[in-house]
Length: 382
Image 1 (spheres, one colour):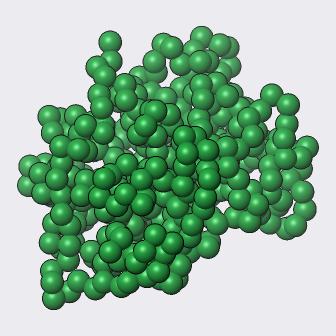
Image 2 (image 1 turned 30 degrees about the horizontal axis):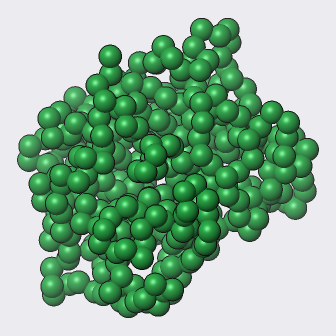
């Protein structure tokens, strides 16, 4: 029986303060509805960073670069050389090294999980997930092995997903894009456009909803998603939330439920980039599918997502933050239960594509920008 693990308890046990050296730190003050927002540069010089994970015991953070590097940012803002032992990635288009998360038992097993684009035999690629142990000297991953592969491999450079989220029971959820092959999101014999649920070692739980059905992938938890580049566990009720890019318009925020069909491409609030309708779509809704929990008719270009449950900035409590690549800002959705009651856009003055956002153990937000010279920022209310 899978041992229940509370990731929130792990995060609460880690106390971390990150800053660049005083001589190099740069802080900007920006306006917001809740007062002055202070944005401090932790480190620059990252090549299209994609994800960030906090190490315990004042050891800094791990950051992925899409080109294929995993780096450590020290507590004083120093950027390490690329760590050894990282798998070879298919770094084309939107593909490359993507998400990074720590095992819920990291203090005992030192296991780091990575998602990335992996090459196939025909020039196409798909999402893969693997894990290895972080060395004591923080310079390499040991014994890295692949635990999951998206099959078939259909991407020519688009729509990989892919975020990794552990739930309260220790199951691993993986969000998978449909590789820009729209109909596959409805094909249950394929892993495109799906949310999958596996054990930490890659095995399939017997209680997954489609286990035992003919011509259906047993890993599937839910389906009908397009390009989910953000996902997070709601800390108040343990539900999995996911956000995804629509086509031209119709970016979505969804609460993921067992076996549900989220509609893509049968239903969408968007249109094709050419201006034509999505061929498979019958409108904004489709029978037998769930509509989005929240939708943006004009696409912000959603990416990383984080709930805010720290006591540090009370004005941000019960909010979910989402990075925006196209609108180049940080979206704050104020929540009452599972209802969005207000939206605020932050960091627009920076003019940078926001790829990832995480709540740090210190109660600050940490934001990655998607650029050749990407940055990691520490964000808080003055």
